[in-house]
Amino acid sequence: MAGLNGPLRSSGSSSYAHGSFVWRLLLLLTVLPMVLAIYAFILQWRGGLNDPASRWPAAEDRSFPGMGDSPLSVGGSSSLATSLLSTTAADCGEILGGSSSPSFPYFRGWKLDFEADPRPKICITSSTSAGLEQILPWLFYHKIIGVTNFLLFVEGRAAKPSASAVLESIPGVKIIFRTRELEEKQANSRIWNENWLAGFFYKPCNYELFVKQSLNMEMAIVMARDAKMDWIIHLDTDELIHPAGAQEYSLRQLLSDVPSNVDMVIFPNYESSIERDDIKDPFSEVSMFKKNYDHLPKDTYFSMYKEATRGNPNYFLTYGNGKSAARVQDHLRPNGAHRWHNYMKSPNEIKLEEAAVLHYTYTKFSDLTSRRDRCGCKPTKDDVKRCFMLDFDRDAFIIASTATEEEMLHWFRERVVWTNRQLNLKLLRKGILTRIYAPMAIIQSLRSSGIFSSAITSANKHSSMENFQNKNSSVLATSVQGRTSGTITSVESQAHRKVLQIFKTSEAAVAPLSPPGLNDLDLSS
Image (cartoon, rainbow, N blue to C red; front, side, top):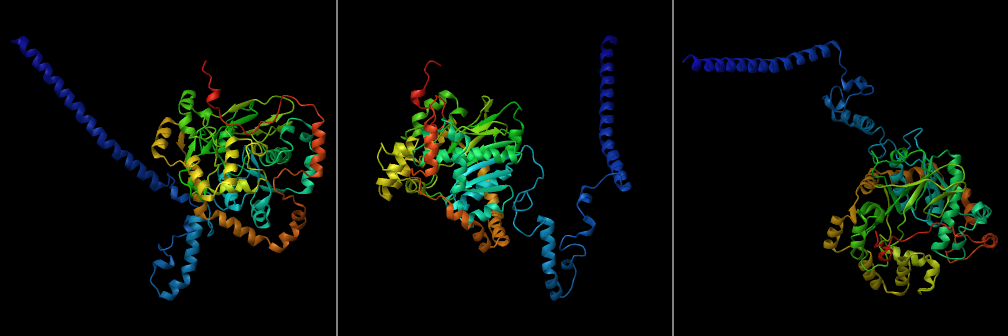
């Protein structure tokens, strides 16, 4: 019996010890929070803790309207309240926004000149004839993501006094008009005497634009170096940088993470895939894009090639070899509109795995006729080869020149607009198509804040139209505004002859290139 009673006493003792431990633990968990609360109260009562609200500037001197001694919180006659209403509204505007004028919610002032010495300093150069409705969203979006300076070579609508006055009023923007003086400078530039661009001479439309872009980029390098820029990017005004992969949605952050030994960063381009034929504002209405070959698994790209092409000549409607950013340094030169080069070395380049250039191409039905109207080529298969480098541009020009408007719209819906929802979902699941909303959200916020209208109003307020016209009358009188029909000025002809005297080499400028096709499929790998 004794042997049986032993274990029972031991179990009872263990149970008592366990119960005592639980009771002490509960007591500790009850008392400890109370002690900490009392300690925090004592510290705050003594002034040992800083109240975050006390850090608000001049908090003791400012009362929110409708509280405390604010005129709207005390009784009184309606006339007194009415007389003080405007003062109260001004106080509210000052507290909430720092200014009664519209501004982007996260930055003070429409100019977005919010950082004194940003690093790295990034410059974008562009050759454009677009209107303010396209340039302003493009420009302020890139300001938001960290671009500091813009070198805009303007023609057409962009060169009109009403547009250029607004652009010149924005901090960091420099306007360069296409004048006779500019062409004479470019005719004496270094790349005129070299042969890598010679293959694009004596051809109209896209070829002539390509030559202008290269010459403008050469001048932009000098301006960027004088302004102590760290990076330079050539971008069209229908393209937006998408800095995916950075710790923040910031191009500045993205480029600051690039190793110091890298000379050039390549951004693969994504192409807009519109879902309606009535797009008015592409930057605010387009969210679906077709991914670049460089950002897709090889087997996925080629297995879905025909479905992604939808009867068009190539995977992309237009170019597929991206754009690039170059570190501003000695001996830098352009290598066509898509790449940079260096006279003294082969640039060390990297291709980004996530970031891209979003190309909003053929997003509006009017893009068909606009290309037709600015090119004086015949709508034949042979002649369009003189004007356009890419197959889809050639097809579009012929359709726009020979078809009725109804036939053009039918062709546009078949070839450009993505109306097949089942196909869209299939390609989205496969990763061929992707949704990108950040640029849309930023530009919609900028527009709703009134920044674009504020820029126009500010330019009109601080610049007399009469003085502006006097200032630019001589510039506009000598500006070259001819159609891109292949006409070459005497200065250009002299330069062309000089170039053609030099023997050709195998190296040429990097032209707009289509993405790989099925004929490029390497079956051995």
